[in-house]
Image (cartoon, rainbow, N blue to C red; front, side, top):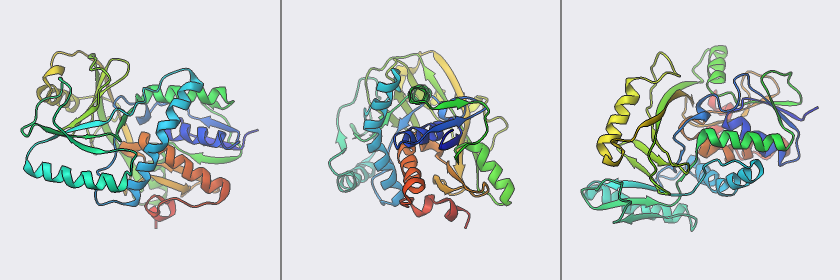
Length: 343
């Protein structure tokens, strides 16, 4: 017998299971597709914060989740014996002109106010050799950003859960309280049932290149993430597509993304492509995560809508829902509350 059944073995379901087990609960996970089969098994893994300006509950929530990750992923990897590829390596962004420099200086003040002493937003005049020069000779370097290998992270937490007695089934009856963390599938199911747009999938594509850029900050340039991974590869991503025919098939948009990345960053020009990846990411109608009571499943709960920042948000989302279920403490931001989403 178990206390909780979690439907979905993506990062949300896995993180929810890990959080509940640490609260003394017995948990099983059910997913017919296996661990990290959807968007959670991606390739990019940029855990980057929102800009430190116009501060909001969502930005504070993400900041607190990024803080949790620093202790969480090393602990999971120690239990599993695998590596999630987690590392707080920071992020570089080019400063292109005087207006960009002014904006960077304003954001540095915002980071000092809201990130406290944990991380900084710096204006720097040096970057790794592979990073292309900027017109101003300056970059923003934030020390809050981290990187993770999404598929490896899912594998690490799944093995850690198994060592704690959590079984992951392809099919099994629900036992105990039920939490739905099935991403796009559930958003579409809820939308169809309610007759309103609750959420849907949004396609993303990315690639892994066979080039070792060392232990270096990720680079965000012209809306492209360039993420050097600890395994000696480099990830490039990602597209954002609301309209598409096949959510799991790569196409010319990924080739265009690769061409842009190679043009912007000459060091990548001759690097072979190891992996091309595509999948649908769960986007709620408000773009915010969804936490709380399930809209259509009686006496059940929902954890969904991570969209592009699910890996960064999952630790805090799971903590909030665990607090809500086990102690009645409601720390769910209003914009994330499942009941507010449909009101």
